Length: 349
Image 1 (tube, rainbow, N blue to C red):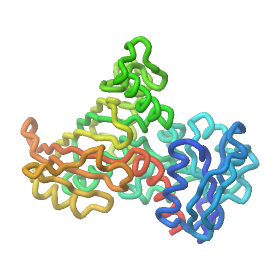
Image 2 (image 1 turned 135 degrees about the vertical axis):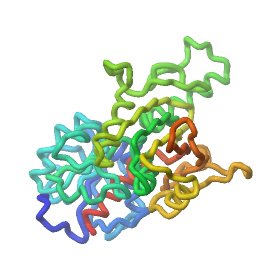
Image 3 (image 1 turned 120 degrees about the horizontal axis):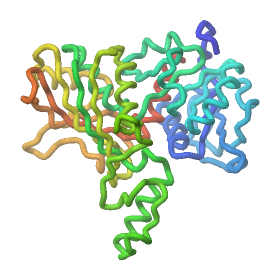
Image 4 (image 1 turned 30 degrees about the horizontal axis):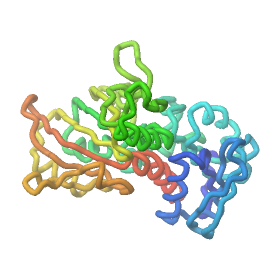
């Protein structure tokens, strides 16, 4: 769909990768926000074709079962919005078919995020960037999304010079098989299975009762690709190429919801009170910050929620104008499916 072509009020939506963890969440979010779809198509690989998925309905689509169709280049005829979470290689292979069919691809993979002709959008931060799409809009990395949602209201107070972030990323970030492995491996570990006999497929090491400071492939400078993503994506979304970002990304034995410890350095002084007020009034942010009463965001209690939760807000005295805080968001919801559907809502509105 070219950017000068009007989006229908009731678009046809295709969910590519519908049988995966994020694909299933796409369907749930479409229902939860009552997206005004006239039709929802579930697409996946040939091995999933014919499978029936429960769908609670949305817009003009009634609740019932969606029959999974094999995704081919012909699958996007008549589609207005294609929500993709089928992997970067599939997104690249299907891009031309989606665009030629007149649809807009909202892609959850890393395939196009840093392409100069593809907007990288978080609706609470840079909604205006959808205006220059050419058929593809990229969904950022999950850990980047929740960080920039919290950074934006602070950046509005004073330009941020530097961000240092350490992530505590859930198994859900590696997909449904990784979540199952955390369950199974925890059971094996508690049953006394020897270390060298534990089932390890999704991660480099045992994830049960462990933390792994290694997400995605190594880079030449000693960082990982996950850390690189947070650096370059944050600069692009915030529209500030000079923003300095240092990330350390760690996988932890949590099912879903990423946590992040974030330190920011501003150009000018920003008080804790100013930051708290800005965050409290920001769309998509919820402040949970009462240390004396043990109130702060925690992954174990926030699974299934839509917001970016911020707590432990305090001054960072190691720099002249610094603040530190902790944030948590559901990786499958705001970190993936919800953000993509919110982009789709922008296109319709």
